[in-house]
Amino acid sequence: MSTIDYVLHGLGTAMQWHNVVFVFLGVLIGTVVGVLPGIGPMSGVALLIPITATMTAGLGPEEAATSSIILLAGVYYGAMYGGSTTSILLNTPGESSSVVTTLDGYQMAKQGRAGAALAISAIGSFAAGIISLIGLIFLARPLSAVAIKFGPAEYFSLMVLGLLAISGLAGKSMVKALMMTAFGLLLATIGIDNVSGVERFTFNIPELYQGLEFLTVAVGTFAVGEVFKTILQREGNDGELAKINRILPTKKDLKDSAAPIARGSVLGFFIGLLPGAGAILASFFAYIVEKKISKNPERFGKGAIEGVASPEAANNAASGGAMIPLLTLGIPSSGTTAILMGAFIMYNVQPGPLLFQDHPQLAWGVIASMFVGNLMLLILNMPLVKVFAKVIETPTKYLIPLIIVFSVFGVYAVQYSTFDLLLIMGCGLVGYFLSKNDYPLAPLVLGLILGPMLENNMRRALTISNGDFMIFLQKPVSLAFLIIGFLWLTIPLILKMRGKNVLVNEEA
Image (tube, rainbow, N blue to C red):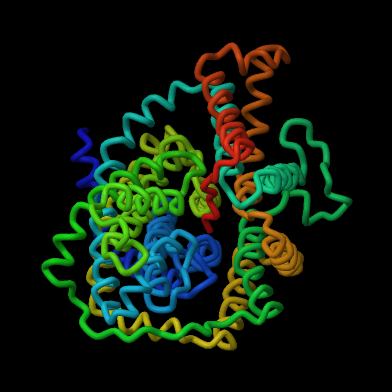
C-alpha cells in the first residue's frame, strides 16, 4: 500500500462518527485549556487521560486506543491555538509557547485591532497545522523503516539523547532539569523488578509493587499542583480585557502575514522534530527571524502583525513536528508528548517503529484526525473569538473545584485505589513546591515514562555483550546519539560561560 492509501484509510477511521465527536471535543477542550492561563496543554492532556478511558469503555481495545489518542492529540494542538487568545487580549500567555505573541499581539489589541490579531493567529495556526501534517505523512514511514533496524544499544542511546535534550532545554537551570530527570528515573525503579523479581523501594507497601502509575503522578504534579499554586499564591486574572471590534483581518493584514506564516510553519516543524526543542523555542526563533529580515524592524513590539503571525504558526507547526519522533521512534520530544506516550502505553500500544506495522489503523487514524481537527479549529476559532474571550473571565473559585473533581474522579476511575488518591495529593504538593522553586516538571515525567524502557534496553544490550559497556560506543548509531546528547548539554554551557544569552525552553 502507498502512503496515500494509508492516509485515505486513516481518514476513513477519523471520519467515523464517534471519532469526529472525539476530535471536536479534543480541539474544543484544548482551545479552552489554552485560553485559561496557567493550565497549559500538559495539565490538560494529563487531566483528560482517565476521562477518555471512561468515555471509550464500550469500544474494542484498538478502537478505544484510537479514539482516546485522537481526543488527547486534539487537546494538544487545540491548546496551541487557544494560548494566543489571552496573550492578545490580556497580555497573559495562556501557555508558555504564546509568550512571544504578547509582544505584538497585546499592542495590536490596545490599538483596537484585537480581532485582526486573533483571526491572523487562527489562520496562521491552521496553515501551520496543514504544513506540519504534510511533513508528518511523508516522513513517518521512512523514519519508521530506519528505526526498525535499531538494536537495544541504539535504543538505549536514543532514550539517553531524549532525556538529555529535554533536560538541556527545559527550565532556567540545566542542573535543576538534570536533577528532575534523575528523580524521574529513580521513581521509575519503584516496584518489583521484572527480571529478578526483587522488590525495589516498596517499603512493604503492596500498592507500590506495580510501581508508581504514570497517570497519578502526571495529574498530581501538573493539574493538582496548579490548584495549590493558585490557592497558595492567590493567582487570578487581574489584567484588563481588550475590546474586540472587527474580527476579520483586512487584505493588507493577510498580505503582510502570508510570508511570515509560511516561514514560521517550516521553521517550527523542523524545530519540533528535535527532541526537547519544543514550541517555545520555535516561536522565539520565528519571531527573531521575522525581525531580522524585516525592512522595518522597529515596528516589532509596537503592534506588527508579522510578530503575531510567525510565532503562532511556528508553535503550531512544532506541535505537529513533535508527533514524528513520538510515533516513529517512541521518543517524546516535549513534556506533552511524554504524557501522550504514557496514554499509548496505558492502552498497551507501544509507540515506535512497529506502530505503523502493528497498529496502522491507530497511527494513520490519529494523523488523519489532525487534518479534521485543524479544519474544526479554524471554523471554531473565527466566530467564537468573543466567546473564548468570556472564558478568560471564569473566576478561579469555580475553576479550582472543577480541576480537583476531574483529577480525583479521573484517577479513581482508572485505578480504583484510595492509595492513589492520597498519592495524587502528595504529588500535587510536591509539584507545587518544585515549580515554585523553578524545578521543571517535564523531565520528571519523561524520566518516569522512559525509565523502564531505558533499563530494559540497557540490560538487553549488556546481555548481548556479556556485560561489556563498550557495546554502546562500538555501535556507530549508538555512539552518534551519545555524542549528540553530550553536545546538547555542553554547547549551552560553553555559550553561557562566554557570556552569551541562551534561549531556554519552559514548555508546559
